[in-house]
Image (cartoon, rainbow, N blue to C red; front, top):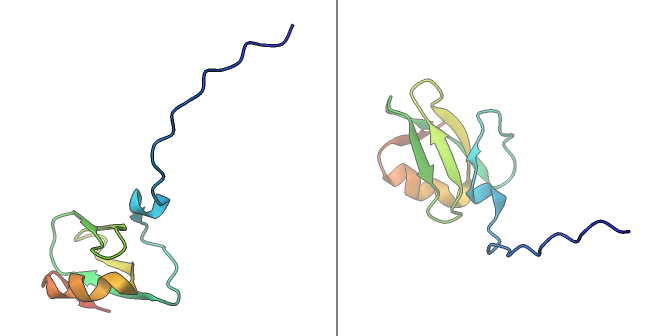
Length: 83
């Protein structure tokens, strides 16, 4: 006798995985990226206005690689400088 079939699952709309996860400190810089330094101390999650990627910055981890499409807007905020 075969095992009972599992019920079908409803699938949530797919979203890119990068929109869910902050970029880690060791994220490798490649083409189309830039390194930014966060100038504040408080931890913050920032959503890239163009890509939707979430970036995590803090005073203890201020430098991260950011998608180049998000750089201009993040620099305009006044909380970041280019490395």
